[in-house]
Image 1 (tube, rainbow, N blue to C red):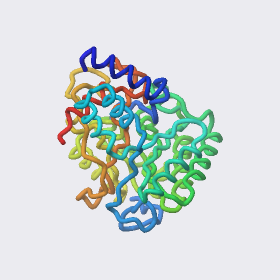
Image 2 (spheres, rainbow, N blue to C red):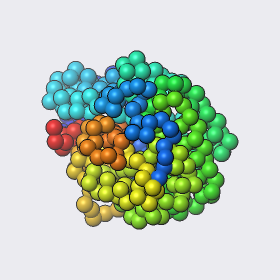
Image 3 (tube, one colour):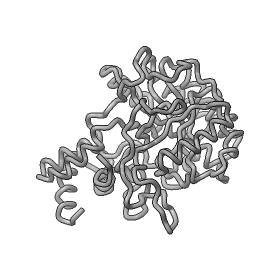
Length: 345
């Protein structure tokens, strides 16, 4: 983005959104790398709210950072940029629950979705020692606090239903060797989350299982996922906040699913339109240049094993303070614009 345009956009966005924190939602979280029989909701595949058809759209947040950015740029006369930003603003994206009191936010999001007869997509991201102390460090202060947090999350869901992705990175970080974590304790907390959230009517739970570039041999994930309750989840989530192509991710997921007896998949396609950064270098997962938006969210996957393609990572929110980015989860207009400009339609 040229300097003058960036300064104008920043000034207008500040006027529209207030502080940077006010425009940031969710978590940017760091993703360093990379059967279940379901929860009894629908053996033929999840349908979101009870009785809703498989092609019912997911909920689109009217006041998302991308939507506000488009408004700000139009007000500043940056019509072409605003049009590109619409490519993000018009798509359903997940809401990340990262703070100590999730119930109200969960209730508000699922209520808004239900009013439109749409399905909310939520991310539970509050496990103790979250992100193994990296860019998105934080989480619950204790195991007991986390269980209470999950109970509050479930209470916020009520009977409205949602797709819930449980704890991105938690299993892969543990398998990769996070020194802060006792594996058995973490897996027990994840199993609690899967079981508790899965009891809510119409809610479909997907346990995060990383991506093809992190734990290359999916067999290493089988035992930990089983200990984390995957057999009672609707499936696993793959490629969250990462950039691997649909082809590579689905191939990896098919291998993992086979080892787990047929576990189903959802895949994050929010930023994988150009695939992963080819390198060389390190931290290629963190705000890599040249990436693009991926396949729009849909239940019409054309693959019997894949329940949905979702935008779990919110495009335009930073992965962390790398390559000039703001803190993890903060809205970064120039990066969002690049993702949109590079996308194919």
